[in-house]
Amino acid sequence: MKRNVSIKNSRILVGILVLLGAVLAGIWRFSPWFRTWAMGKAEQARGAAIHYDLLDEVEARNIRQVMTADPAHSRVIMWQSDYAVKEPVLEYRMEGKENGETVPVQAEKFTDGGKNTWIYRARISGLEPGQTYGYRIRDGKKATAWMSLKAFAGNTFKALVFPDSQSADYSAWKATAQPAWQRNQDAQFFVNMGDQVDNGEDSNQWNAWFGVVEPMAEKIPVAPVMGNHETYNLNWKVRMPEGYLHHFVLPDNGREKYRNQFYSFTVGDVHFVVLNTQNTELKEWEPDLMRDQQEWFREDMARNRKTWNIVLMHKDPFQYGFNPETRPGRERAEGFSEEGREWMPIFDQYGVDLVLSAHLHTYRNRGRIYDFQRADRGPAYVITGVAGDVRYPGLWKRHPLDLTVAPQPETDNYLVLEKKEDSLEIQCFLPDGTLVDTVTVGKSEE
Image (cartoon, rainbow, N blue to C red):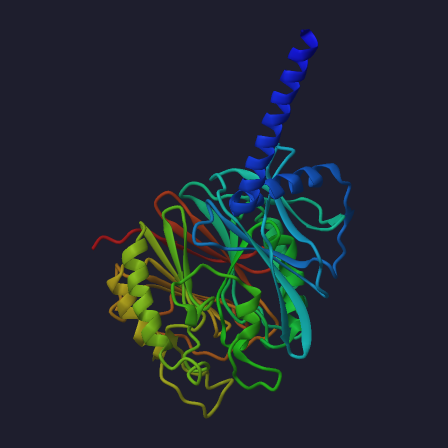
């Protein structure tokens, strides 16, 4: 009797297992979400169990975090290799936890200037504000070391701001950027104000630029600005800035035609807008860039308006005359550039607090300007200087609106931007840490 009961129970158990197997098979077949989840869990278990050899530089280099629209909850990780890797994986985990998550990796072969590189990108979402994470890149049985990533939190922060870094050999850029990072390990992100490289089609220059910033970029995100030198080909003719557009996957601006060209992001209660000022260079391909970008700017500011608003633009809104001592016979009146005439009234209209620019390789603090005049309201305007070895010693006259001019002839410099509880503070430093100028921006009473 007991044997019959045992046989009956066994048959019931087998039936349940068969039914369960059929259900799971059906779910596996018809539910892509379940397959992705199950495979991800298996991948995590495999990742936790395997001992990985280190990836070498040709398999994963130029590692960088890239700014997203909401860096409190997300981050883009990008890197490159000299040949296509077979199993690229991006893994991340919260600090103190053994197991992590894996995210899909997109790979692209990019050929520019006659040279190939494979560019990889992965987007991490669902980060918890203020939490620290580790991430690493895997390929088969190889992996990088764990690197640190921190989700933003709060309304106060520090950022490093670098002017034009275009160079001949990037040693001056290294001597500026790396000491700045060493002195400001608490910076949450960094900005490069355009002209990252001298020639946008030269892959050697891009590798040199990334080589300098990689110790910083693997830990904090970069917010890049496109400059005019990003639009040059190897014959020094203008083209679409293909290198820049492929090397940085930037926040979506809702306009596929202008993908990765202009964008915005928010850090705490500060909204940043990054403009593309290469209207002259790109007029053959994008004749409506100015009009379309201004339309986007108005929509973006209406939708994303925060307590504070900062604009980052490569070309300077001001026009400078030439110094007759260094450029005799060259005449140009001081005033406002085409970019200034087009954009400054819009900045006034939408309550922009600070405008940072570059391009002229000089540091100048112009204070608050409203309706093209000195005022106690309107944006504060700062042109950020130079961080590479392309310098214009004594080229420009002093503008009537300049409050502070860097010591002449100018050498390299960098800026530290700090958001305090009730103000913005910008400090300009020489590479050796010497303080040149401090600009404090409070909320104007209008």
